[in-house]
Structures are given as C-alpha cells and as structure tokens.
Image (cartoon, rainbow, N blue to C red; front, side):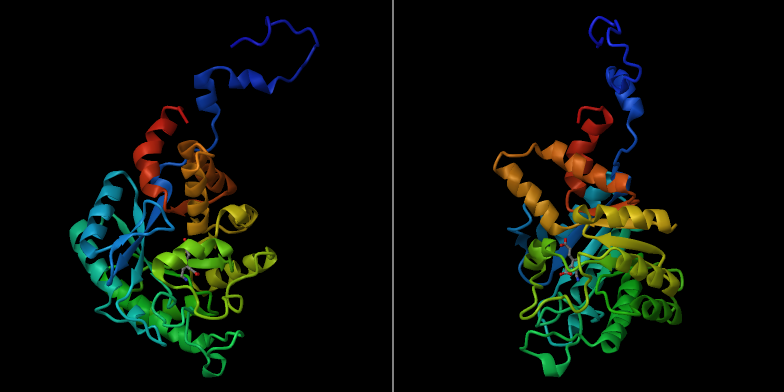
Length: 345
Ligand code: PBG
C-alpha cells in the first residue's frame, strides 16, 4: 500500500502510482466499463440442421424454439438487443430466401416479437450471401460466373436488399442492418421502408465494412463462403482509413440512423476516428475470427479467458464504440460482468 517508507529520497514529484494503490480508488479511477447494456448478441437461426458451430465454440445454429430460449436468457441478463442471421433450407442464384416472407428470418422475427414484445431490440442483418448458391452478397453478372473476377451487380442487388428490409420490418424487426456494402443501399432501403409504412423503423448501417480474413468462422457457421473469387470488389481494403470516413459520410447522408465499423480489433483507429467525426450511435462488430482466435488460445491454456474477454470488449468501448456486437455477449453478461462490477477482473 505504501510506496517504500513514504519518504521521498529521490525527490520524485509525479507519482501516478499513488492513485493505483487503494483498490477502491482504482475502481473510482476506472474510465471505461462495459456493461450488458452495451452489447448486441448475434444469433443464427437455421431452416436446416440445428446444432453447435464447430468454429465458434459455444455458439449454435438455432431452431426457432432454441433461438427464443436464448433470446429470453440474454434479455434476462440485461442484453438489450440481438442480431439475427438466417440459414435457409435452399440457396439459389438470386438469394430469394432473403426476401421470402415465409423465410426463416421473418418466421423467427414473428415468433420473437410475439414472445418478447419490446423487451428486446430485434435487429435483422440484411445481406444475400447466406442465401445465394455462389455465396456472394448479391446478384452476379452472368459473364463472371465461374471466373475469379467477381462482379456483383449493384443496382439489381440493392432492389432485392430493399425488398428484404421491408419483409423483415413487416415481420417485426426493430432495426434493419444491411451488411452487403453495395452503393446507395441505405437510401434505397430508407425509401422502401418509408413507402411501405415503416418510416419509424431505423437503419443501422454496416458503413465501414472491410474485406477481412476475420470473417472465416462466420462463413462456416452460415455456409456463406464464396464458391469462387472473393469480396474485394465490394468490401473495403483493410489498408484504408480515409475511405471508411467517406463511406460513413455517404450512409449518413442517405439516412442511416446508426453506423458500424467492422471488424473491431484490427480497426480500433477507424472506430476512434468515426467517434470523433460523427455524432450518430456508433457500433463495432467483434467478429467471428476475433472470437474464435481467443477461444482457441483459451482452450490451449494460453490465455485467461475472462480477463482477455474483458480487455477486448473494454478496448472497443474505449476506442469509442457505443454498441458492441459480440458472440461473447451472453457469457460476459452472465459470468464476467458481475466480477467486473466488483472489480475482481
Ligand atoms: C454478411 C455478414 C458477414 C458477417 C456479418 N454479416 C460475413 C461476410 O461479409 O462474409 C461477418 C460476421 C462475423 O464474422 O462475425 N455479409
């Protein structure tokens, strides 16, 4: 508790350690604390085989029943929102499962809404990649099929995304979250929602979404890895920060109500800059690869799980994110947060 004998032999003036000695003073000095209210819990619902996701230890492909149970548990723990991804029974070239009113996501939304009412914010991820047979985020130009240069047709895709958004809003989604990175989709989705009686339904834009290697485990979970080519023709180059600011500006101009940076950990500088420049709620997505990497090291016994999770989530909030999308949401709220509150972790 006391530094040496309390004497100041070296005549040191500034001693930042003074403030770190008393455990309660440390608690009072803590600048950032992640609470369950900061978290959004991504969940997968499937029209095919339910069960654990091997690459995402502890996460599952849910049936609508098990999804409802997980959502209820999350809500009880103080988590305010879930983000829903669907795995359809069939995929096709046009990703038609994404905008089928009887598709897996609309059915899940209807059930969740009727069971949970307004106790949980239901966020619908909008993208075609879980629904297309080729695994890309939109309609492909016929010329490029099978080749390595992939061209996703922008405007044709945007029309389908707008259609899917209206279907999800009608099924009970409280927030529409397009993750495709097509140009002009925020404006088109806003227009379609307004025209169809959903002027009050907000949009969370995946505004700065990078072409990241950290999505690997998600693509396993959703069976959405591109069959050929990659997503570099529509997702952003990880090397670019100014471009991210431009993307966010455009989405705000087109009517986004909240913005997202994705992934989170390798992009904390982008989160920080977006926080400074924009005044909308800012989300950051702690993606599947970030989660899987941590879990794998924990399994090896190389990292202390709860401390590492806390440090990761705290860093994202400290960088400036208001909302953190994370697969750790439930375990953080349930097992870790009580320790953080009592300053054990
Ligand atoms: C759909 C989508 C992806 C993720 C969220 N929405 C995958 C992708 O772009 O390939 C990734 C989420 C994660 O890795 O946790 N476009």
